[in-house]
Image (cartoon, rainbow, N blue to C red):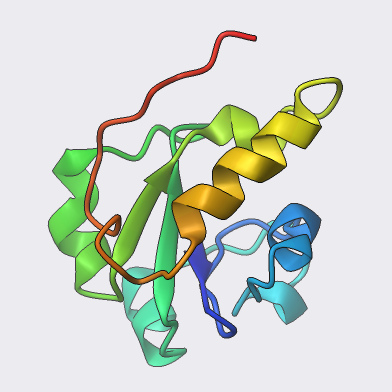
Amino acid sequence: MCASVPRSLAAARRTSLLSHLGIANVFDSDGPYPQVAVDDAAQRHPDLVVAPSEPYPFSARQLPELEAVAPTIFVDGKDMFWWGDRTPRAIDRLAERLAGAPGPLRSDPTLEIDSR
């Protein structure tokens, strides 16, 4: 997922949570499930790549390719895609994780997965 602050790269259309946090999706106009190539992502010049742990489990293995597009922040995919009673805490965690992006949190592939 690519994101910008305010210009972002996201591989998925459902980014209203990111929008709430001030992150724009550079693929927002490409329909709900765009097929995204790394070169296309790079040509859109995102400020940031937001790499969730699901539904596709991005990890340190993809970091060099993602960082070739833009600075990368790994986030817990549950915070982005699992809606319900965990959402208020998820918003707080994502806001904290993305604060000051693309700052010092950018390349940390380790995640504390919240089981709540």
